[in-house]
Structures are given as structure tokens and as C-alpha cells.
Length: 252
Image 1 (tube, rainbow, N blue to C red):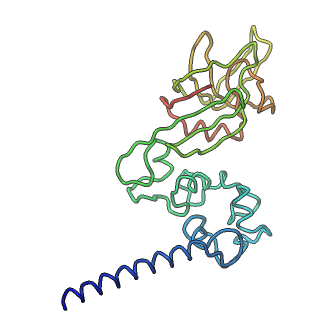
Image 2: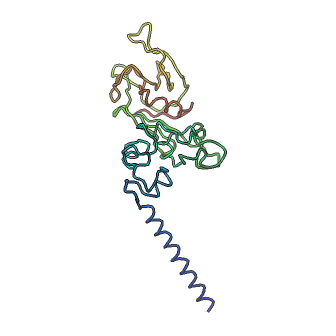
Image 3: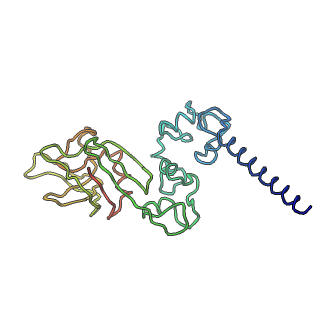
């Protein structure tokens, strides 16, 4: 009799477990307001209203805004990458990609802001002091730069590398120095670009080479520099702040 009771209870527990799983799966796919985002995602990831198709009432549905990189609960057409809802030093786009909480300044409750942990290379989802590798990749063929926190791609955008007569060196490098502002060209050169912001020095093969902001052209996507990697100001500040001395760079 005792064995039958135990068997019955085990079957009951198993059925309850399967019921919970089925219920969770259903709730994860439910989209009450038909905005293209499940209720689960609205509540746990984007923190939008699952019963309101347009949380910020800007005439665009939450789903349309998310797909196109806009914040679904900030007006004035703000991009997720330009918004820091909880003011923890980590923009909303990165919070979503990294799985941190964009309305909680300290996702792992370890006493450090999510943005501070990313800045110094620590896992913002673990209270343990776990370091995460950062890396930057530059494809000269496609004229694209991507950078990563562990295996998470934070951003990818067009760049301008060196022209054929002054190519950007290929290889594996590390950031040697971060220079907030410097001048390029001047005496002896046919160009002069003073006060160029956000410079990441990565090698001194014959010349000093940098990944840096460029305000004097908008030819990103094709070679246009004298050997450095040119990045638009719109993208370079975030990359500069993210990078650390010692961060790996792969140019291929």
C-alpha cells in the first residue's frame, strides 16, 4: 500500500511539473497587445506594457521600435544605444544584449553598477569576480568593425581603413594606450586634423597606428585613411569607453 501511495505521488508531481512547463511555454509566447513582442519579453526584458501596443504613445508599436533599435518607452525618437534608463552607465541596447536588467542598476546585487562592471571587464550577472574578455575585430575586406564582451557582439559598424598606398597593418594587436584627443598630420603632411577625439593606439610598426574618431569625412565603408582605422564620432565614443589597455584587436 505504501509503495502505491509513493508511486501515485511521484506521478502527481511529474504531471504538475509538466503542467508548469507547458504553462510557462504558453505564457512566453503570448502577445496580449499584438505588438510583436511576447508578454514575457515585455515584462522581463523590455519593461514595456504587455497590454499596451505603444507604451510611449509615439504612434509606433513597441515591436516596431525594438526591431529598428529605438527605445519603446522614451519619446523623441531615441535609440536604445543612446538611452540609459536606469543610469548605471550601461545603455539600454547593451543591457538587452548582455541580459542585464535595464531598470536595475545592479543586476547581480553585488554592490557594483552594471556599467562599472562592464567598464572593468567583470561579469555583471555574477556576484563572483569573474573577468570577461573583450575583443575588437576589423575586417579590411568588408570595412567593418565589431567588438565583443565575451561572446556577445555589442556593436558592428562601417569603418575606413588605409588606402592601398598606405594600408592598415593586419595581425593581432593589443591596445597600448588610450588618448582622449590628439592632432593628425600638420607640418610635412598634406592634411591636418586637430583635436581628433577617442584614439586607441595599437601598434608602432614604422608609424603609430590608431583606431580613432574621424570628423572630416563620411566615407565609412571604404578605405579613406593614411593607415589608421577611422570610425565615425557617432560610434567611436562608446568603443573608446568600452576598450581597455590590453584589449585584443584582430585586423584581417
